[in-house]
Length: 199
Image (cartoon, rainbow, N blue to C red):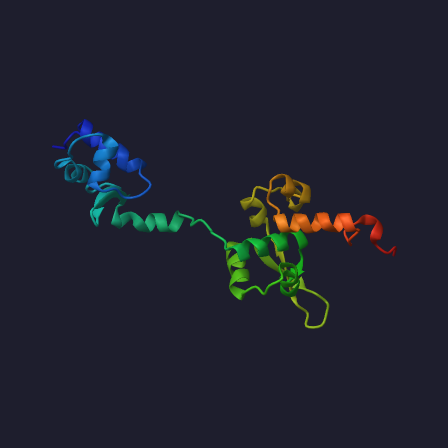
C-alpha cells in the first residue's frame, strides 16, 4: 500500500522543490518551522522511489534529481545556457555592428588580440559564420552574424541593434569612452562633423 503524504511530508516536498540548492535537515527545519524532522526525509524518499524524479541525500544535503535511468532523455533535449566571456561578448558585438569583419579588424577595434577559442565559441553557438574573404593581401577570412544570432537576441534584423543613443540612455557605455567623446566634441576633435575633409 502506498503511503499518503502528511502535512510534514508535503511541506518538505514544497521546500525542496522550490530550493535553489540542496538543503540540510537543519535548513529544512528552519524553513518549514518545525522542531524536528524525525524520519520524514527517508519517508519522502521512499514515496519518490522508482518515479521519474527521486529525493536523494548527498553529503548531508537533500534534493530532488532526475532518476538515474532517465537522465539520458534530458541530456538529448536540454540546451545548456551559453555563457560568454567578456572577450566573447565584445567580439560578438563588433561582428554584429561591423560585419563582415576580419579577425585583424576585430583586434584593431578591441585593442587587444583575440584567442582562437573566442571565435570558436561563437561559431559553435551558431551566432557567427564565415562570410568569405577580403580581397586584400593574405585574403583574411571575414565573419558575420547568423539568423540564429538574431533569433537568440530577439531581433528581426541587424537594424534592430541598439544605436549609440540607446546604449548611452541605458547606461551601457563606458564612462571613460563618454568622457573622451565629450572632450573631442569640446575641442573640435575628429568626431565633429565640420572637421572632416570633403571628398
